[in-house]
Image (cartoon, rainbow, N blue to C red; front, side, top):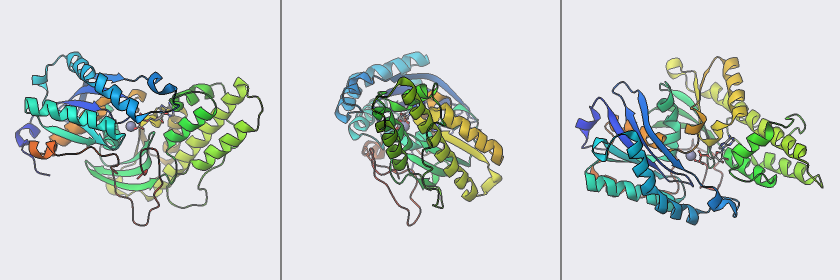
Length: 374
Ligand code: KG4
Ligand code: ZN
């Protein structure tokens, strides 16, 4: 990609406004990237109102898109004000351009285009998954290369991150995404949405050893994932009781969470075996909304300790969707002189599907809520 922003790329500090609207969160943030690659999050605004969707038991794309239209300008204004800067002090605007619910992506990307056009600033169209993939570099010192376990509501992947824009997929889910499994289990148990945090809260008082839920893909080599068998087993356990007490629900939640964490750790261990030996990197980064889960983090931490790897996990609030990770991905791209000229940026279309890394040859691809988990 050509760039007409070479001068900007050589600046010591870069300040980027990030906009995230790919699902139900309306988020904007201003982030500064120092010349040495350090990061300061100057502001971080997220507007989440799950009540809009609660009656429907899941995110309704049309409602989400309308909410973004109503809230995005206010959220951006708040983020700029809270950063202590004005638009003049911002070098570029980054916006999620996909993958995600396309109505919402369109709202964020079009708003970013309008700001950039009116104020002659570079626009960076960011892959939402790259935002998650680089989030650990924003919140800590995750040098390239590293193994990435990306676990969110629509994606579950193991990716070798060799450098900025250099991603190689090692494994993916063949059915549901990890977050989807948490959300469906919560729905089944009547815990409400978003499911992940509700399951985690319910599991605190539960016995993880009450149900011996299956270990998916035990006899399959490689590091793909599967959550559909686990979901069926949970449904059977829940339906086997005529009346579920609070303790029963807590036990099912805890047993499911344990089985999901064990599966994620087991497949990650397989990926550690096949990960390239480049630079002798033995860093595992975990990112995406499901990475906020304490039980999963602690299972991965034990795995890393046993294998002599370092686990790097962003703070929970930067695992779930946020504008800062989009701003940061934009700043990394701007610093690498990868901002497209204005004419190219304005022609960019929102994408419902946008794989971060191409699937390995002959790989199976599953379907899913936000498109194939590829
Ligand atoms: O990354 P994210 O905010 O949005 C997507 O890009 O999908 O991830 C949302 C997913 C949801 O499925 C939500 O239930 C899950 O992350 N999640 C969690 C937790 N917090 C959010 N799953 C398990 N435990 C949590 N604490
Ligand atoms: Zn996400």
